[in-house]
Every structure is written in structure tokens, then in C-alpha cells.
Image (cartoon, one colour):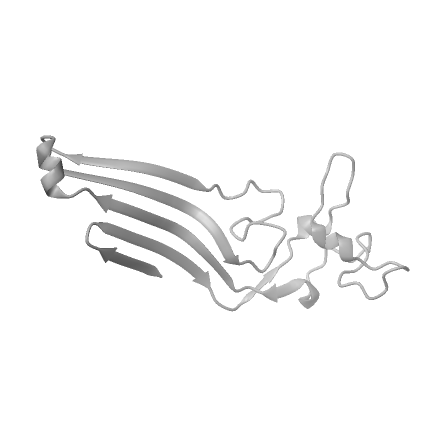
Length: 147
């Protein structure tokens, strides 16, 4: 969805992407993860079954069937993400003519700002597995000068 708003010399644009419905699975690499001194695991493993925690949301991490796909590992796949956002300002023409140019526009643009709804909180929704490099967030400043 592309939304925009302009008033006089100011323009604001935002692009929001959404996947509604469907199912996504906790990835198999995250389910087979065991914490070590050199390896982190997703925080959902803090709520695993044990004698002290019999009502846990997740099974024991060392269960032999942990890597098998089943409905247990499927969750609602609805994802909403703000992909791009731009704010720009056109300097008034009477001012820019005084400095000898035709037009001047400044802008600030950002990409991959935030995820509004993420079905799998332990990873970026655009990543396949937990240990993939996350999607980068970019911030750009722009200046457009017309001669």
C-alpha cells in the first residue's frame, strides 16, 4: 500500500507491505538450537517444558521429534511492515532564484523502518532462518538542485 500526502512544498510518502493470513513455521534451525558458550538461541526456548514448568508453551529442546514439521510449529502468517518512508521539502522558487538556481528540494528517506506485526518475534520476517543476516535499515539524505 502506497500512501502519500502533500501540502504546499512538503511531500510525505510511505509504503507499507502486508501479507494477510496463511501460515508460517518456526524454522527448523531455531528448533534444533541448543545454547552453548558460543551460540545464542531464540528467547522462546525460555518457556520450555520441564518438571518445574509443566505448563510451558514449547516442548523440551532435546525432544527427538523436535525437528519434525507439524501443526504445532505453524502460526498465523500475517505480517505488516513499513518498507519505505520519504519526507521532502521544495524550497520556494522566489528564494532559489535569488541564489541563481531554478529549483531546490531536500529529502529524507528511510527503508525497512520497522515491522508492525511479526508472526515470529525471534527473527526478521524476511529472513528464512534465525541465523540469516537481518534486513538492513537505511537512512538517506538528499539534495536535488535544478540549474
